[in-house]
Length: 157
Image (cartoon, rainbow, N blue to C red; front, side):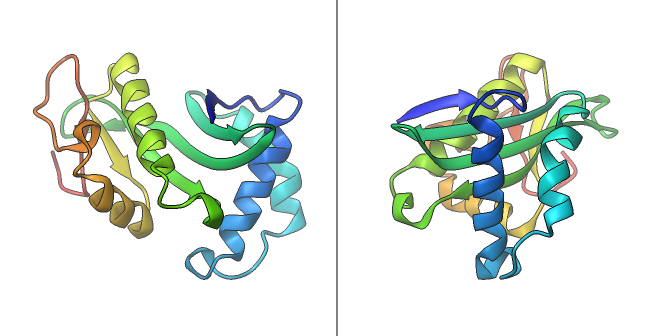
């Protein structure tokens, strides 16, 4: 399986992003309905305009099987950058294989590389995922240092 930082203009990444986002929206946890066509058609270009937005994709051979999206933000309580996790999507047939843990670990590395003080989940289902993954070494709540980001479950840290 190949993990890569997604590109909005790369050959296969935009189609992979659209497919995985559509799949997630069709899931009962994602609302059970497809994303509107205007959302799908504008998603790639809109995401590309957001400074420091990140998409991480995992491919199995040539097929995209998992995705995480994160947007950089700012912690007013720490007066530092943070990385906000918006989506973590894994196709059903690839679940329970550790792909979500790989995505979160990669987001943590990205946050550390950017000097972020913490990772924050945007939605309840991301919080639940992070709590399930919290036993992984890369996801344990960490002390705030210059070399590690703190995983935050919605507390003011």
